[in-house]
Length: 128
Image (cartoon, rainbow, N blue to C red; front, side):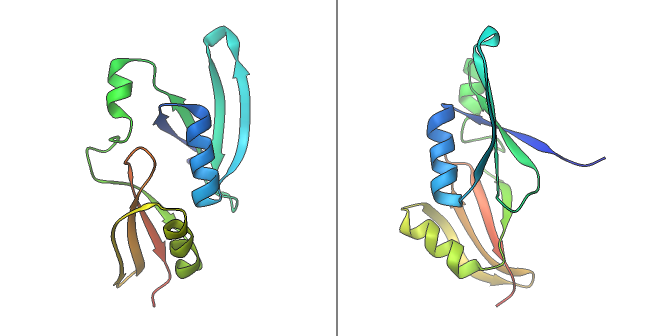
């Protein structure tokens, strides 16, 4: 078995897609209308591969409450990079909220950032 996708609960397909493409250089892997269900099958992910994110548009009060708080305030996702400075500088240049760091940890350079909804991510690069 392998992990292929993770659902990311969002307010809107297009605003989420635009943010992840512009800030993280993600690519749209699939975008299929599903009119009989009133939704779209939207999958985004890093261009280098790995699991994709199914953008799940929130439609209930419980789902709306989870937008931006999918892990109760803990870091939700870990984004690895081979060039920490390049990708950190890109986040900063686009006005992304940096929550902590960058700092050197035994396992690499790390910065915590918030996505457009407030979910926390670790950007993790090779040790300095």
